[in-house]
Length: 159
Length: 159
DNA sequence: ATCTTACATTTGTATCGACAACAATTGTAT
DNA sequence: ATACAATTGTTGTCGATACAAATGTAAGAT
Image 1 (cartoon, rainbow over the protein chains, first blue to last red):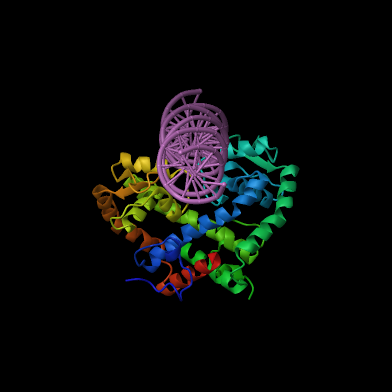
Image 2: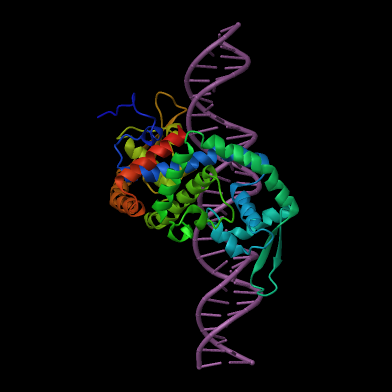
């Protein structure tokens, strides 16, 4: 039983060359993982140029969002897109690049406080327009209303 | 229409605790990465139980899709959800577990042919229902029509 | 005061992935 | 026939990552 490829838009089943008919929920699972990898691949060039990994960039964004306030490790971990087990060493890398600083919290010495440096802020500012262009490029096939629908569905999925 | 936030569904902006208003395309990018990580996390238990990594499972699925025909390395790489650089060593792991076999191709001795073993097929068969349940559980907040819409939008995004 | 438990981060270890160098085989041009 | 290029896969290296155990700190119970 062969599918009608000719009239159909290229779908996830074509992309992964599935030989069997997938159920809608299976398709969604695969589609989401596949699409997120697709996005990562398409963004790789950007991260390579900036000499940051996507996780490092993510942490810098989180710190900028603190607007001058420090963040401690557990806060950062909570907010990261993908919780990784070893934020310590990620911060080490950022410190070596002088993009953040680390100091132990006065009121609770178990905690450490992490600040983004001016150099870090400057780097982010420089990257902003590139990231923006990249986002626009990668989402150019969907109009705003479609993007909204997509976001709503993703939010609802995780609800 | 004030205090609209109170009645609003939890969105990606709440999830990542963004302090700034994001544009729709930014939201989509983050939402996709975040959701795929969410799915991976939620599926982790399954992979741990089966003693397979998600990539190994993915490769076994691809081989089963071959329906008895072998696949060579480059074919597998093409079809993997996330292209990894070192499929050789991934196959090594699967061979050690006796889930696949490897032999050089007769007609083109640069190529190798990879077959899934009966043990591999049996493992997949055993996992099928678990995977199915997992999929259903993870997509339970969306009905079929919503899943279809989601799939269409993802396909269109990558088009 | 000491003990236990919880919290916050760090460190050890083993594995994974990216990248590059390499080897073997096949294809092609002269 | 020979040389050169392209294909296909393997191996070495190194940084990144996951997971678990260890460390240091705080708070509560007895």
